[in-house]
Length: 120
Image (tube, rainbow, N blue to C red; front, top):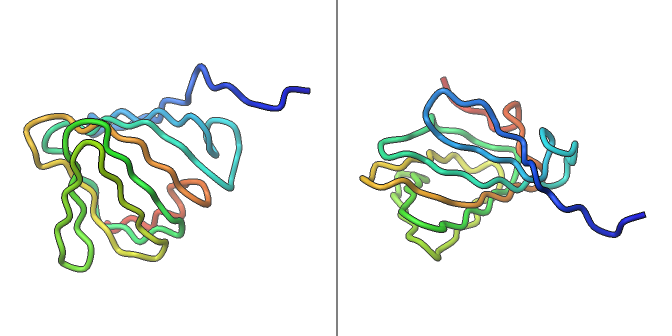
């Protein structure tokens, strides 16, 4: 039995907003409910509705910039920076900038749309 799992074909999450989501580990890719790891590229002008997730989320920006709105505070991450947002925190994610934002998101427990609690 192997002591590791190599991911060579992540699950591509279907989107309608131009964002690329490649889940390497998590519910959609390998059924893991404890942890999810996804590689994402958010196009310029992209944003999501506010949400109050039932999971902790760590974001690490590879290139570009990503904006977070938390408690009326705007936080901007640049390449090489990261942020941890604890579960039950109301947050809005966006890329209001002119360049795509490439980043890694790690969620514990794993991301699920039902537990993201996105607002309408």
